[in-house]
Length: 117
Image (cartoon, rainbow, N blue to C red):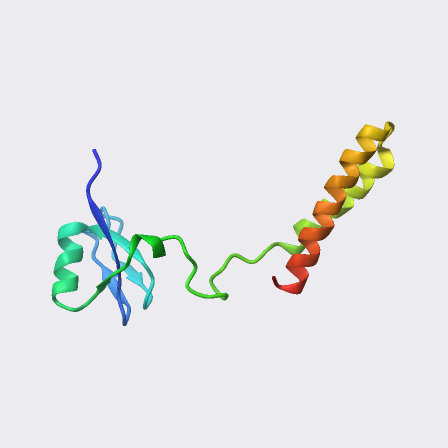
C-alpha cells in the first residue's frame, strides 16, 4: 500500500515530527533540503508558509557542488593499477586490446576526477 507524498523544502530548516516520520523519531531537515512527506501534511506546511513545494525535477539534483558526490580518487587509482596489470598479463592481441581500452577509460576517469570536472 503506497501513500501519496509531496516533495517540500523548508526555507529556514525544519523538523519532521515522529508521527509523520513513521515513528522513527523527529527528523531535522536543513534549509532548502528536499524531503518527501504525506500530501496533507505538506499542503498544511505550504499553506502556513513554513515550507515550499519542490518540483519533482529537483528531487534528485544536488543543490550545489559541495553536495554533489565526490569521486573516490583512491578507488580510481586502484582501478588504473588493475588495468595496467591486465594489459601486462594479456596473452592474445584481442585480450590486450580489451585491457588497453579498460586502462584508457580508467585513466580518463582518474584524470577527470583529479581535475574536478
